[in-house]
Amino acid sequence: MHAVATTQRLPYRGRLAPSPTGLLHLGHACTFWTAYQRARAHAGTLVLRNEDLDPQRSKPEFARAMMEDLRWLGLRWHEGPDVGGPFAPYEQSRRRELYLDTWRKLRDAGCIYPCTCSRRDLASSAGAPNEDGDDEPLYPGRCREKLGQAKTHATPVGVNWRFLVPDGEIIAFDDLRQGLQRFVAGRDFGDFVVWRRDDVPAYQLAVVADDAAMQITEVVRGADLLKSTARQLLLIRALGLPVPAYYHCDLIRDEQGVRLAKRHDALSLRALREQGRTPGDILAMSRVGKALRGI
Image 1 (spheres, rainbow, N blue to C red):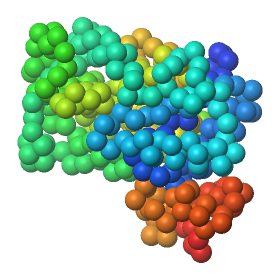
Image 2 (image 1 turned 60 degrees about the vertical axis):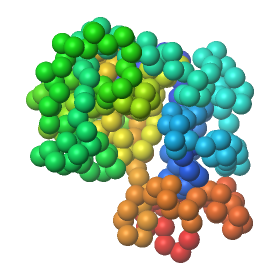
Image 3 (image 1 turned 45 degrees about the vertical axis):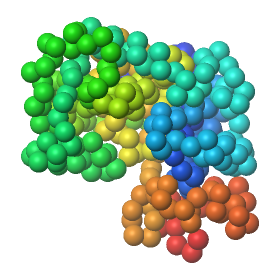
Image 4 (image 1 turned 30 degrees about the horizontal axis):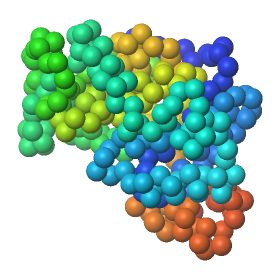
């Protein structure tokens, strides 16, 4: 079993890491307010990182809106795209060299392999998509035999690159909000993508690289990413990086019990602001955190 301690002795460094792929909603407000308050409670540093990694979905207007909405909510950060800092740039779209260096380290360590499976191949496999908002299907391992070919690739371009998970190993960590978490590699998640065939680094790789480079000591985010944390812990171990503490916030759901997403335009901070809601109203709504009836 791979267990992870989360005790931190370094000066506290937290982060806000929104993606500019839509307007922020109540769930974001709850999570980011929690991150802000935890940084304040520890007299620590708060970093804003613009996770504009996906060139197809990320829009400058959403990046502007998310910073405006977070400031309106009352949040302040010490480092970020608008204020600079020692670990700039704070936009993922400008950090490609770091991600390439991370990819090379994983390749040279024999941890990743090129995958040429098509979407049709994956759709016809026995593995079904995972639940809880984690939409990466359980990979059947068809291209694992290509592990030995990894070092023949000078760049990641043209194929998906997958991290080889240790099948059957229990990945456990003590979450500061959700308690002890246990996932079994190869059962709860399979070999996951770290670099996409369209030459875009995947979320798992970019977040691990950035959190380490920016010396983040505690990661505050939504509970829908608990399984991603198990994946990221494997990357952290493979790269020999320090392990941050984790605090996964409870999810806010709509009247049907569905977790909020950016498609819930009526519950976006921008829409609620336009209705005349105050920051206090937003925080009171997000603290309720259940059905959100009457909004």
